[in-house]
Image (cartoon, rainbow over all chains, first blue to last red; front, side, top):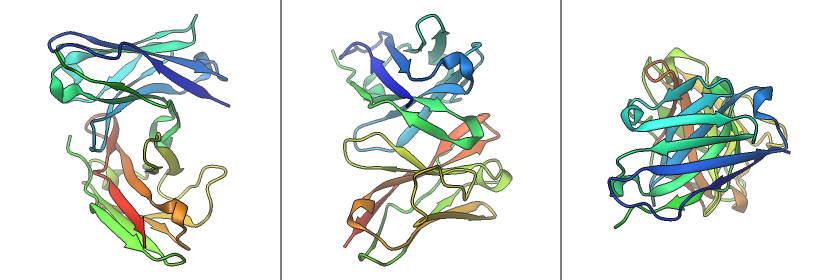
Amino acid sequence: QVQLQESGPGLVKPSETLSLTCTVSGYSITSGYYWGWIRQAPGKGLEWIGSVYHSGSPYYNPSLKSRVAMSVDTSKNQFSLELTSVTAADTAMYYCARDRGVLGIDFWGQGTLVPVSS
Amino acid sequence: QSALTQPPSASGSPGQSVTISCTGTSSDVGGYNYVSWYHQHPGKAPKIIIYEVNKRPSGVPNRFSGSKSGNTASLTVSGLRAEDEADYYCSSYSGSSNFHVFGTGTRVTVL
């Protein structure tokens, strides 16, 4: 069974960079599919942030593209998210997930809440 | 890219059916047969229940069904059960972003 677990700092200050890592178990990320990040602000809907293939080809939400970077570490079976110049509007639950592209997102991590506050 | 439009809420009694709409544009819902549906229980991660408009992943009950007409996709939950009370989100491939766009979400209440 594919399992994903997000990790990262519990709090980020405004203007700083939010960095999260997702560790995948039960499946090798080099076996295929994309690996993505989705966020959900408190009481709000889902927002796709971006997805990256194991070879490193990323796709980003156009509204966040200027501030987002994703990468893959195949040796650790992990992938990562960096979001720069954060503001309070970036406060959200951040989910990592296995992304089958047009076939949908089939496995999700439990999510990690990242507040942006000074 | 704009979020797909869903009604904020829907409800039905146990055993009844409820249908949720998801309206987009010809650049997403209308242009591709790549609509997915997710449900999310409070405090939990979303779970996929429909992909490619009307296909169910293994283990998803056939009470969940999907369809599409033009720029609007629909999810029908038949034989409502208490455990179906959740938030439901549609998603579509978007030619604008080359990937996903989510719907605004619908809270389903089982009366």
